[in-house]
Length: 72
Image (cartoon, rainbow, N blue to C red; front, side, top):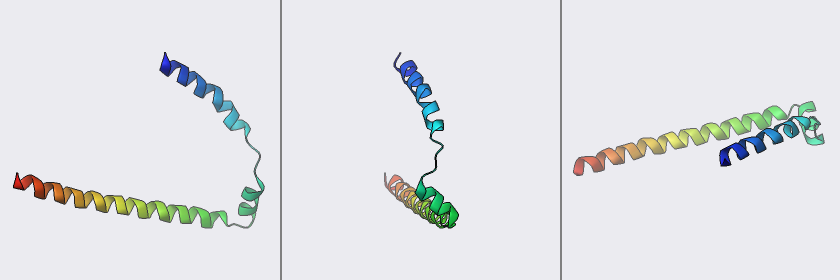
């Protein structure tokens, strides 16, 4: 019952999301001056850095787990 109610509520909110088609002044300014590409590149670089950081931590943890597993 709870999941059905949640799904129904989400379906009711979906048309409202598509109704927001008006662009704000900030979006228009970023597109017209082509600064939106700078924003996209910055976000992509930050996400790539986070992924590299997470994979390096995962690699270190695997080494530690393997090291501690061999002691036991």
